[in-house]
Image (cartoon, rainbow, N blue to C red; front, side, top):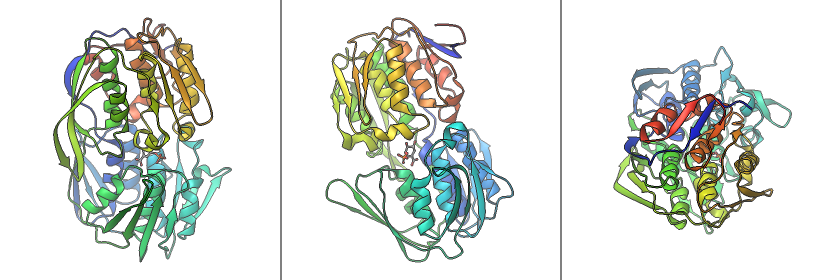
Amino acid sequence: MKADLVSGVAAPLSGDIRVPGDKSISHRALMLGAVAVGETRVRGLLEGEDVLCTAAAMRALGASVVRDGDGDWSVRGRGLGALVEPDRVLDMGNSGTAARLLMGLVASHPITCVFAGDASLSARPMARVITPLEAMGARVMARAGGRLPLALRGADEPLAMEYETPVPSAQVKSAVLLAGLNAPGTTTVIERQATRDHSELMLRHFGARVAVEALAGGGRRIELTGQPELTGGEIDVPGDISSAAFPLVAALTVPGSAVTLRHVGVNPLRAGLLDTLREMGADITLQNARQAAGEPVADLRAAHAGPLRGVQVPPERAPSMIDEYPILCAAAACATGTTVMHGVGELRVKESDRLGAMARGLAACGVAVEEAEDTLTVHGRGGPPPGGAVIASQLDHRIAMSFLVLGMAATEPVGVDDGGPIATSFPGFVALMNGLGAHIAKGGTP
Ligand code: S3P
């Protein structure tokens, strides 16, 4: 396999940087801005392909979405219930969040929308949102197994409902809440494990009434009062902790490194990787803790402090670090001892089957790994893993970036066959990492 990008042994990483804006928050800012009254000004919007798909879709649904400058966007909303029927297919690209949240938002508008996406997104399950949205009055015609492309006819008279999510998924929760926005009455979501609460926080920021009750066992009951007056305002998008995870783990695995990452979102329902890395012995400090758009934000400093140690990652931590397991695998490969990630079956339905992709890729890099249905075990090398392989990205940005980070700490360079997907979430990744001391180059054989 030919490499598109190759990552060789890095110099000790050092620098003080800002990573791009949070993807989850960026999608939500554009969607809620489009159904609010007045103007929403967004600073620090992630200009990755996933979010640009959402921007294009909101325009097709009748909102004015304008790029004023680097990361500065303004959205002029139509008011709740006033989205218009698009005259073209809504192309959601690679983005599960864009597809599922938008299906929710339009499900309570009396319009027909056709959703499509790339090969990765077209293979991902949508039944998890189709089921509750149909119960709220939408009608959906999808490919076998509830896959994209699909057509959704929103309800003329949407019904508020109480729904318990069968999988811990912020996308499913958010789809139901967004559908509930234009339904009279109270829409309730019960989740047995708490998932990222960006929708709840941003709905409140726009003026909606959202009541959250903690349930025994770590779950939550979320109640949204329907048909609120949503008012546009200012949103300062924090840096994406899921993107910060890559320079963070690089600094923890390349000897002599120390990096500072400014203005990173540290919402506790997203920050499980920090807990796990600290348990592995990582030196990570949070400074200047503050709030932005209702979200906790801080500067992160990470420094190499000897090899990390393998740990058991409990299943209940999965929702708070669901996108970080691929990069945790890179850390675990360099650690002393064994890391076991429990309860991670959901990784099989992400942009790729991430359990399979990580297991195969680590094995190709000379790292012993055991893959079970719901568990991944990585036997750390206690130092640089061998590397020396080209890994298939499988249209998955996080697989590509994780192996490029592994290459920085490995004995032999590591390549990926396709670096294109990185642009979905982390435009500028290569330049930013090379600016810190990495050696990622275009093409060649490792
Ligand atoms: C997201 C929720 C998570 C996560 C995804 C973004 C969101 O997906 O993996 O990258 O913005 O709500 P699930 O809710 O399907 O677990």
